[in-house]
Length: 314
Image (cartoon, rainbow, N blue to C red; front, side, top):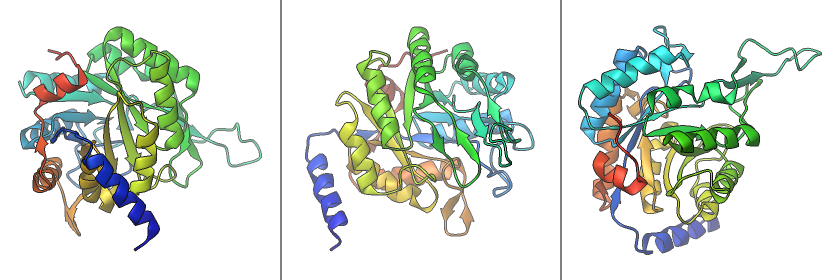
């Protein structure tokens, strides 16, 4: 047996026997901001489609719906009026689901490829940190994401910029307005800095983390990468995890067995099985079957609020 696999199994078993309860919450990331609209004809794009996808995911068993917005043609957006429409539609439906709005947009820096690297390219979309969290401040979701570092996304010349100073400002403001940040850890340093934010008192109890695996060029989709992040997460933390593409469903099981809460959705993976495009609800249903088969139970939104110490917004 490969030694890495042996180490992973030993750690997994140790974690599984450590007395964690057998209830987990499921998050569904319904659309994302990737270049996926051309790859899936039914990817939610309009506010109505995104809201409907969130509602359907909740009915399938997701406790949390993670929301990005897009223009009608599928182009990723951060326009506040689009967020407002999605939030209003979900809340007016009387569907019990925890909304988790992204604050990841507005940090793209397209480094110039000519003689001057400061001649930024057309993919640049930079906003100040208060503008990036304006959707959370205006619409008060129970949760919003907070990407915890600067990193390369893919093989382009674009980097996503999140400086320590800006992250501290954002975390402080989110704590003031009562929106819980979900610290997005794309690599080990992101988790380290998230732990530092908690140490500095900028995250309320329990701090919430998400391990994002398999996205080039952050942490790979391996058990060892997930375990390494877990090893430096504050012991008070509650965490979710996911891996993209074909690793999505295997990491539903892996996340649960390591003591976390799984995330699925079309942001991370477009397929239900090889060659068969999925809906968000179908991905949630499949995740819940996996959870059930390994002896765990999905939590309701009310149970998830209690675990995360959230206040339901109306």
